[in-house]
Image 1 (cartoon, rainbow, N blue to C red):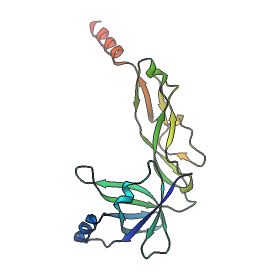
Image 2 (cartoon, one colour):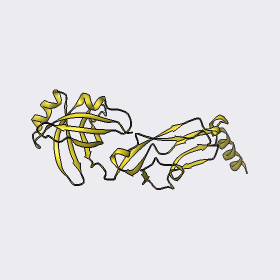
Image 3 (cartoon, rainbow, N blue to C red):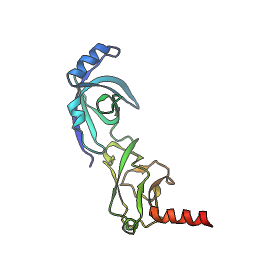
Image 4 (cartoon, rainbow, N blue to C red):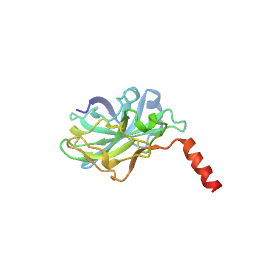
Length: 196
């Protein structure tokens, strides 16, 4: 079952840049909360909560000061500064329990492809896919065993068996991973082709 964590948030008024700057110095990050059938909301969240978030997907019980009802959200996007090392803005997508929605899920490849043991090169083409599911069924990640992949084999999205209650929305013909031929063999074939 997907992990649910709790974040506290403070209401935020849009358009006050000086306030945003002051609150960033206090360890607060501006965030937008939105979702189908839910009103948009501007808040501040704790930077330390964001940095200590779990890996993969998770649900957030967002407790907004002054609002008695927690909001159930997923982390949609994080914007970073120009150096790419400091989060400056966050998007949270509010979901409804029992209602399906689309979400990006990380793909984790496990096992050592048998083609790699023969000298082949494993190449991952996709590191995430989009699925449609209810909040309670969100996978933290999709685990794909690649140990049976031989040299020249191609793994497509359609080869994934999704967990119960989860529908894969990424096109089935999309390539997940391949085991390419060793570079030496490719170079030899190129040389032979050129000499012929």
